[in-house]
Image (cartoon, rainbow, N blue to C red):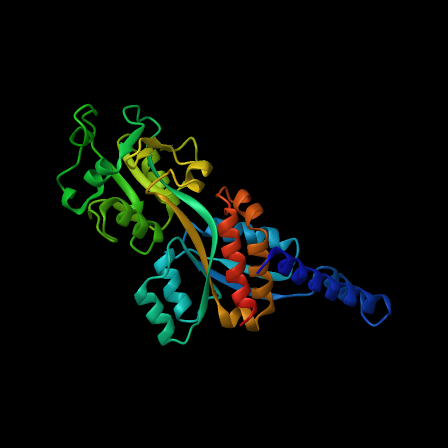
Length: 325
């Protein structure tokens, strides 16, 4: 959908509000009805679940959307990308937050349940590797060093910083990161260890990134990984490392994620919208339209990285496919 088309949709909504206001002025509606018309007149619920990384975006969208449609209740839960798809493919949610693309087995699960959906890229994120703020011996690690730390063959073997590099101190490694239901887990293991799901088992996993932050901030030798936004929200609790993907050390920033130099840990974030919910529930349609149209403001509010022009074009085209359903 072009920007012009989105404006037309917005204009149509405005005209609907105007018609309701005229009715109220004509004495056909009560004062309460008039207030409802001014608010847009919609009500009902929108259920969102899935990635803890994408949740702040959907929550920011819900907060801003509440100013437009205060009677629509948008609930955002976090069960991880995989957990979210389980609920989504069971028909329990309208929207699934995802920090990776849907897997083949999840596609099959949705197909078996008759759930048709549309994938929409909604923002960008850099997956950050963090250490304790007291860590003064490392500012940058190569992908190979990260694989040495996190690879499945390192379980019970690489337990000290000086085993990663002899110049590092004799301090035990404390490892924290995303759980197996998280899209962040899938992305990190594939990008660093070369195989999705391949990781040492002797680390502390959690679907809640705040628990990872607590673990890293409380252990001088700790390391963890999660989305860049959590670093920006907790600058005094963790220190983000630069990553050398083969072309030198690069810090995770909005600029390096968008220009592709923060490799291999820059990624797109998604929402998956149930086509039936979008078609049959006006409150879902209104929320999703608002989400895509205001993606830049939402990304800024949630401390994420907005879409490039090319990505915004893709997102509006994805939205257009929903409109044409």
